[in-house]
Image (cartoon, rainbow, N blue to C red; front, side):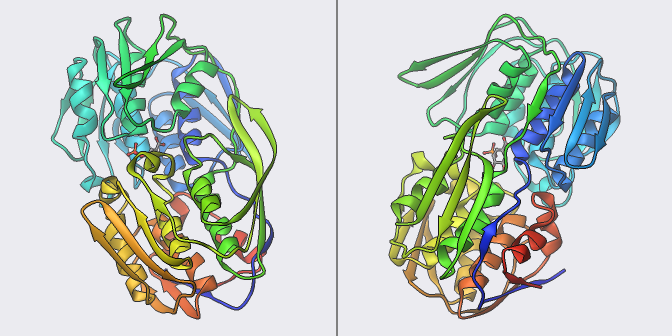
Length: 430
Ligand code: S3P
């Protein structure tokens, strides 16, 4: 499916952003591992999250849902499901591989789509095997996991990966042995915050080697209530569109503003974006706020490697903002982008070039030469990557000529309803 963004109208109003993808996966998985009932509201019902929902049902959890993102998960003893199809979703595969690794008597084969089957898994199977996990296969899916009684580990999380950290923590729930993760560059901590909400003990410390997270003595989970905030990674597209399309003004209510996820917004503020946070509050252990962005004149940015984990999924959106800034932007430390849903570095540079923007990659550094305006008038190859599609559609709304993206159906992996949400703001997307 192709989608075209045509410039000429501003985006304004309240954007109805669905629930956070990372938190939705975790609420389902922890709910399935917990005793009793977990009630979830604000669940993201995207293809990736539905892959996790089907998986936990196959492992034996009871899952019910009603309209409006309300879900109930009843956890229990996991059983062997045969094969688990994780679709396009790295989070489904990596978190569930960790969970199963520590469950004696459970055996599962994990498969994925073409993109997921090219993504590296050894970053996770190596630490799990150090804990004693039994995993058949190499660095790619399919992998077969035979759950077993695991030992402890002190894992150094480099490159920074919340999925690897989460896999080790979930594997560690089934052992009493010491389990700790050291992070020189902290990654998103939704698993830790949600584990605490389910009654698991965690301890934190700062060491010269980085931040250490340790599982405490109590590692059993009890069902609870979780209200999920709006996804800052999805909100990035209408909010960046608001920043670059003259006359725009967009508000997102109840957005997750966990500081390990807000790197894009901090960078855009430094670029001169008019961004206002209000009504900050604690919701199910996470901070949420209402976020409003209006069109602004943008300066270029210089992002350093240690800032990347807090905006790892927002680089396509940031690259679009940089294309509209006046001058040369420099974004360092982007090696991990090569192993996302596509080679995102390659896809960003090719997409920008097609739209008349000079951009280049040296090593892991991306340079974008913004000129305040962008020509557009291109067909952008998304490489089947949802975030590349949404980023270039946002670009098309502010360019001189329309922008078309291919494989727009992949947007449903993270943001079903994207087109309707953008159209409701006034965007010309067809
Ligand atoms: C995620 C972690 C990040 C991110 C992904 C979601 C998570 O991946 O890019 O979209 O939910 O834990 P890595 O762990 O590979 O950095």
